[in-house]
Image 1 (cartoon, helix red, strand yellow):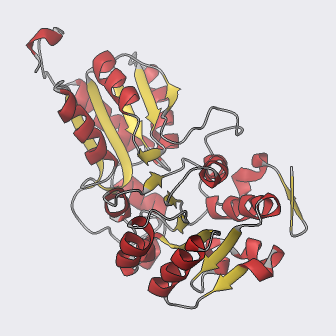
Image 2: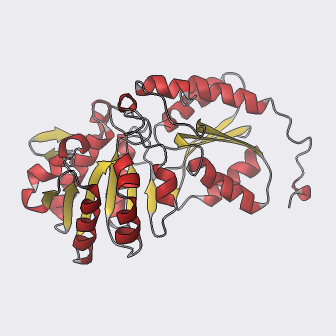
Image 3: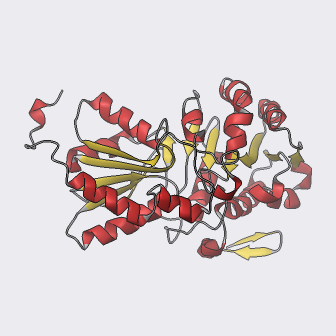
Length: 337
């Protein structure tokens, strides 16, 4: 249980709290133990919930105004001075408006800066393409020294924020905008940066997912189990460094892989998984669910998830399609590269 600016909460309250709210509360807790933490934002203290930290530690919180490029320049200077800046703004602004500063000021110098990017993916669907972030994972994972984490829910967000304190170098944690439903019941499920979490085991097909798609994939696996399919679900919360061992075990065990992400299919989770498989020389049936090289429509997130087949029904349809594909007659690996 935590005491933050007069609010008592536990991880079990996550059903009524957004990922960003949980982040704000956890960061406020960490501020007691880590005086080196400095909070920074660009006029989005309320929207990103880092304002909770600012209320508790006003002398360690700075709002630079609507100037995202300057935001990361300030963060770099603080990191060089020995502080641990936590920077919060929208994912679209981090990855595009301040792209050069994140790359050159933060990553090039391998600075200990933690970036909590909110409104990730199409979670702010009513704001349109200007505020959606469907390219941010691709951009951030391309930067040397950058660690990229996409938590499944508020509880995993809490774990990621706590873990990144002791993880060296820049870290990008991408969360949503609203009241994302929780998948995990508590924090004790073995979260570790760079290590996938097996949600369910299976031998017929593997769903490799991240972020809000973890819950949808898990629900799809339950429905498909009633049809006699054995579906493995992997939560790849860390896109970089990615868990190659877990991915290759899934390839060998199931020979069918579907990646699912709230992001463009170019450069994100799907591309990262494809890189691992291609480098191994192994073959498998492979599909990527996500935005197919297009800007998203404008609408409520739930409607957009259904449209782009990122909901339970869409995932079930894609699994049935891949299971019906005759990609190789034998199960002999000897003919592989």
